Length: 248
Image (cartoon, rainbow, N blue to C red):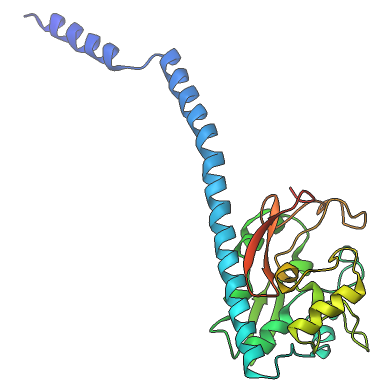
């Protein structure tokens, strides 16, 4: 076999092994289609994992409250002083919530003897989800100094959102669980309604910004820690995820 014939054979094999431009474009298109199919699935899986971690943290808060109530007089603490002592003071924002401060840094200060660490007061999705990309930090991430250290809390507690004296009927400062339910019925709060019992009263919830409230800043409207709803700890200690059409 002549040298020229060998060279031609090698060149032919190289041509056979090479991809044409059309073939490369087809491969790129296939990869793009696969990515478009897989990315939403991965995003949903990440969201579900964050929701589960948040529910677990709320469950730990519920257990800590049960221990606190069992160790004392069966009453929630009256620490309205801690509302004005939170970093930045009471309600350090101009948007929604417009008339109260539901941040729960005060609860970590009260419950730290019943919880191993402050992580139970954190919602992982706040720092990695949609709220991390908008101007919601002051309403959702509260840094509370404890014994020279610092704990970051995220969850809201609407029934401990004010500090007036006397305690408003829709706040639970110093009340028993039964007294809190009865007071909330008296208050006839249009948001909380008239609960049947402790199982239908929110104790803690991850942050959300309803699309139906005009005072919510436009960049936050409809935003929540978890897509399409929110996790919540109920007054009887159980946790659940609530689908909320006011969030996206």
